[in-house]
Image (tube, rainbow, N blue to C red; front, side, top):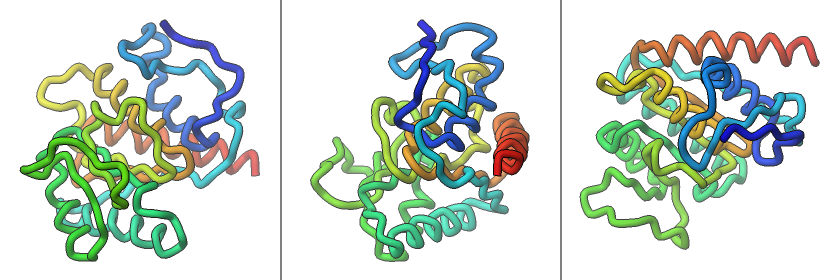
Length: 205
């Protein structure tokens, strides 16, 4: 069922505002499936403030991966442990450019896309690369939702893609970065939502 909450303790107001903007049609259509249900909570009621999410709009897969890893490396150099970061993709195949970029920079990671992958060893430090589906129930201070051009995926209903996107976005407890290397209905929705959120918080400043 859809919950009505007075306070959101996991996400910053900025992350929650973007997730709510992107999920707006779902809130009107009814409750989603799964254990991470849409939270009918106003962004102003989020307990904390943080950076406004950003969209990295790359020309191709290698550029997208390099830009994403630039952000991860900068956060790590500023003191954030690699284990506090995750890159979420719709499919395992989309993880390969990010694995290559992390390897080029010498940054430790574990990826669901790796051939020998069985399960994460959470004791080993490193960026985690996960599918959107497997991110349910997890949270990280810095989350990248990558490869937005793949949403909706191969005939997937738009509302299902938006549910996955909502869950993925709300894994971020502090900073959310989104990235794409192409166009899709979800990319355009995110772009419009980001404009609305930026305007909303500019008025509050």
